[in-house]
Image (cartoon, rainbow, N blue to C red; front, side, top):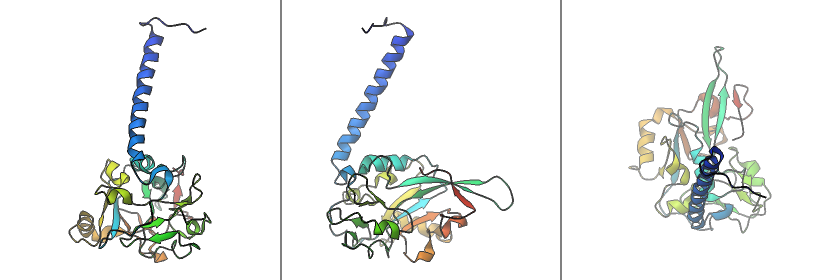
Length: 258
């Protein structure tokens, strides 16, 4: 039999505080849910198969000097695209780099996502042509064709793909193409508190991404350039230890998966 507490008792105050917190949390979750319900990328599905925006070539610039590793991009991407719990289309991985001089290791926060390569190795290995590249360079997956064989997951040198636990098809970052087509920014770009991510049209010489890339031309780097995939995700401030790969290097240690 339950017993009510006096309104002024410390326990009653704590319970009231908890109720208020939970009510606010539910309200936020409901608001996010309604926002997500309006997006075509709902429930972890890739967007419908359709041509890209004619004349454009999208790319992303990540300024590591501004990334604080807060994971706001990871959370906003999950809210927007709703991949299964524990799977992520983008995340910020924390690395430790050993220094040759014996001093304390350097800590690096490295945002990871699909590089939407000019020469994506995931496309030719797909036996059913489910993975394709749009005219604007965005690489997507046709869920209706994908058989979940995982060939594209193995072919990606950036560890940017996974088999969705719910759809049993390949899943990955889409640059939030449904938002781009509506004139909005990708969720990860919009939520970045440090302004570390910039997306834009590489074919537009006056775009912000091209302006910033021109300003930091000497410091621009991409991951694994030797793979000849011509990635369209560029980094400013990327340590040399990461350029030719971040996997299996003795000097670079991944601290945790997420």
